Amino acid sequence: MVMIITGLLAGCATGQDSFAPSNDRDTALSQARTFYNNREYYSARRSVQAVLQENSQDAEAAKLMAEILDKEIERQKENLLPQAIEEMNSGEKQDEIKTWLERSRALYDANQYDLALFAAEKVFLYDAENNEASEMIDRIKAKALKEGKADTLFIHKMYQDEITDRLEQYRVQAEELVKQGRFGQAQFTAEKVLMLEPEDPRALAILQEISSRQEGKRSGTV
Figure 1 (spheres, rainbow, N blue to C red):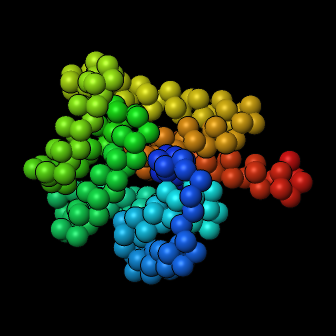
Figure 2: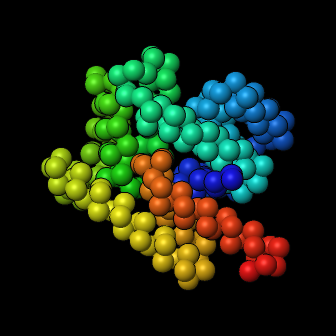
């Protein structure tokens, strides 16, 4: 199944009506497919994201982005579940670092500062002295403080508990939205969970159910 996990990433687009020139768009997507086929998913995602920033409604780019994110989630399952982090090679760790930094930036751009901080802190599991993550955390805290939203960002234990509670709320909300037939909102809510817990079984099950129901509606079986 192709999981459409582009809501937050595409939502970071400029919002302008400008479109990338056709040649630039086609070149970016061609490069992205090459990166994808070479299992260079971070580079593939950056190429597709450039297209989505110009036109968040580009169906071909959105589909490719979903496929890339699916592969990244599969890689995380392969790496994090069967083997300990310390057993990863340097290349695998760099892939994880890039992925979590990208998630943190996307959440930051979406003004979800607590979740952005959580994602940035994940980087330290792979590199305890990562400068990019430290700089990202400083940016998140500074902007949250400026906007008066930093009350939970500086108490680590309370913060972790709040994230756990937030993720559970998202799971419950997504399941309820599916029951109500509000599939778009349910998908977006489930995707918030997967941004921070890519292997979350409930969120994955929700997306599977949405896909099945939508397919059933298209075929007239539901």
